[in-house]
Image (tube, rainbow, N blue to C red):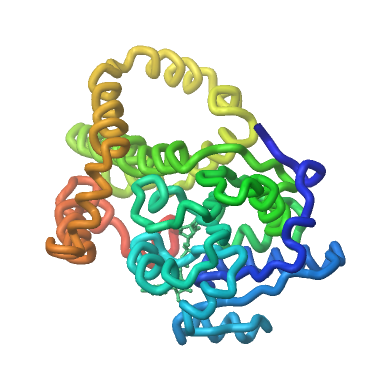
Length: 343
Ligand code: NAI
């Protein structure tokens, strides 16, 4: 199902207190959009918006933007009829379970912008509450800029728990409030959103990174230079432009913009690739790593009793730097002049 402006009334927001926990990428963009919509639509008995945040640079931004602001999470939670949980995913469980859940109104509507913590049941949510997902498929700055330019942005919506019996009306009102229904909001679920998001990160992009790495090593072995390879494969930005065309014209249809030799090579080659290993790997990641919860448990354990996420990332970057591609890129270019021909 798709929902547009005409399908969503703002009335369920009247008289409510809406609390934003976090004023970062999504928090700021969504709070600004919501405030502007409420003003533009002259909603009777308009909702009150309150930002809760630690005293940091994000908090200074909230105050500069003219929002009411508090550092008292528990007080903010006790006032909330609707509570947007917009701090980073790894921060949410401890903050929510220890400082927010104990003082929440039983019928509060909890709004998440990512399915992760709800799907893996990391949040202790009372059964009388509503839980909805309003998940923009855009970074925060685009959520704001596309609102101000009147374009809207793609967004998923779902109701995960309907404690009050009115969660859908609220979820759709919030989608309209933040400006997502201009372009059509897609009904989804925390399962679908988490599966697709983690699958792209853990299966699809790793396959693409591995394909580039092996392509580089193969062509380097056949005498191609670092300079030529870096530019041919990614620095020219041709791949980025092809992806733009995929979105605009269609994943396969955009091929007509390429030469006949290229079209023939891409269409025939993609049908001849032996995908049996890829299929097996994709199924393993989707079922044994993501849906089973094994990845989420492993990731949580890194900080709980393992080496820590940051330390593990450093190790992985170190290992990635050993590939022929990474070494070739380092030989060819310093980061400040990547993708340019400036001396
Ligand atoms: P962010 O990284 O911009 O969050 C910064 C905010 O979190 C600030 O208000 C900061 O004060 C607060 N914060 C950071 N660490 C904290 C801590 N230890 N304790 C208390 N507050 C802390 O977060 P972002 O990217 O806006 O993500 C929020 C939610 O939106 C997440 O669920 C994310 O998955 C989702 N989302 C993010 C998108 C993006 O483009 N960044 C896109 C769509 C969804």
